[in-house]
Length: 85
Ligand SMILES: [Zn+2]
Image (cartoon, rainbow, N blue to C red):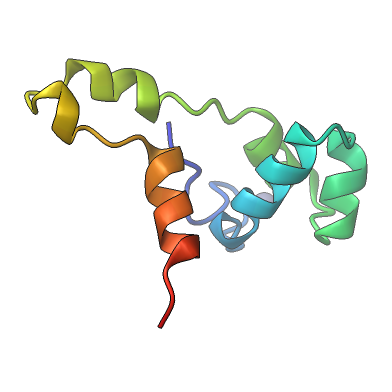
């Protein structure tokens, strides 16, 4: 659904690396290279990235909110990054 904050096995914080991992993989880089660059070397942590399936945007379709008020995680993330302070 959403990447867990910590690895289930060793407890290392992994959620802070998810957006960089996802964007680089979507650009066509291999998962291995991206995880190596992010210093995710333990296999327990690597499986957290490799096995994660983002389903939150599919679940939002079943929300009680009207369609014009629904926002996908991608839209929310983009609006967070585009914010100027
Ligand atoms: Zn781990």
